[in-house]
Length: 445
Ligand code: 5AD
Ligand code: SF4
Image (tube, rainbow, N blue to C red; front, side, top):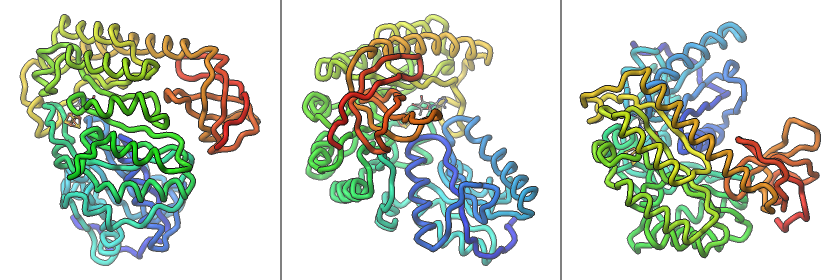
C-alpha cells in the first residue's frame, strides 16, 4: 500500500477545491513550497508534485478528488512520461486519512490543521513512501508558515477556523475541528503584510467568522475597526457568518465603518422551523428575518447572500415552500443552493425520510429560479448608480477590465485603469450575472 520512493520534487502545482478557506490554505501551501526553493507551475501535468487541496462538504466534492487524481496521472504520463508525487490535503484528507492512500495510492495525506508540515511530509514520502499527518493541533500551523509576500488586489485572511455548531448535516466540525480564533496581533500583522504586498481588499475568513473573539472580548467588529486603520487598505469583507453570532457591534460596524463593504453572507439553509430544528441550526425563520431587519436598518443598501439546502431528510413540499417564501421575503442579492447530501458520521445521515432524487432536483430548480430572479432584480436596481469598482483583472476584450462593486457584483468596463485601481463608475448595464460600467473620475487609490 505504500507508494514507491521518489526523487525530491522540484516543481509543484496546488489545486484547491471548495470554499474560500481552501483557497487561502492553498496559497499558504504554495508559499511553503516556494520557501523550500521549489518552483510553481501552472500546468498540473508538468509538476513533480501535485497538491490537491480537497473539500468534503458534499459527496460530489469528495468523488471529484479521486477522478482528479486519475486525470492528473494520465495527463502527466501522456504528456511528460512521468508519475508525479500526489499530496492530498484539506478536508477529504482529514476525513478519509489512510483510506485515500489505500484507494488512490497517493504519497502524502495531510489534514487542514497540519499543512505547515507539508515540506517535511514530502521529503519523508520521497525517501520512504507514504507520509500521513492528520493531527489537529489548534491553530499551531499559522506560526509555522512563512510571511505573506505577494498578493493580488484582493486577499483572503483566515482569522477563525473550525465550528462548534454541529448542524446535523455538516462535516465541518469533524474535518476542521473546534472553533478557534487566531490572535488579534497575528491577524493585524498579516493584514499589514498583505497590504504591503499589494492587497487593497481583505476578506476575513472563518467557518464562523463572526464568532471570532479574543480574551479582551474585541469581537469581529473590533478587529474590523482595527483593520480599518490600516492605510492602503480600502475594502474589508468577511465570510461565512452564523446567525447566532450576528452581534450588535458587528451590525453597528456596517453602519459606521466605511471600508466595511455592504455585503453579508448569512446562510439560513431552510425557511421552515421544523427543518431548522432538525438541522440543529439554533435559529428560527423569524429570528433570522429579524437579524436581517436590523442589518438593513444599519446599512440599507446591504447586499444579502445565503446558503440553502433542499431535500433535508423528511422535508415535505409544504416545508420546502416555506423556504421559497423566505426567499421572497428577503430578496437576496446572490446565493448558493445545494441538494442535501448525506455525509458519513453526521447525525442527519442516520435520519429517516430520504427525499427522492427527482424531488430534490425539482425543488432545487424552483429554488434557483427564485434566487436567479432576485439576483437579476438586485443587479437591475444598481442600473444608473455610481459606485467604486476595484479592478481585479483584465477582461477578454482589448481595454476591458474586470472588478467588483461594493456589493460584490462583477463589473466590466473599458478603461486605462490598472489592476488594483479603485475606479469610480456609473453602472450602465445590468445583466443577471454581471454589470457593465463606464469610468468616471479615477478615485485616489
Ligand atoms: N449537503 C448539502 N449541502 C451541505 N452544506 C453543508 N453540508 C451539506 C450537506 N451535507 C452546504 C450548506 C453550507 C454550505 C457551505 O454547504 O449550505 O452553508
Ligand atoms: Fe457546518 Fe453548521 Fe458549522 Fe456551518 S455552522 S460549518 S453548516 S456545522
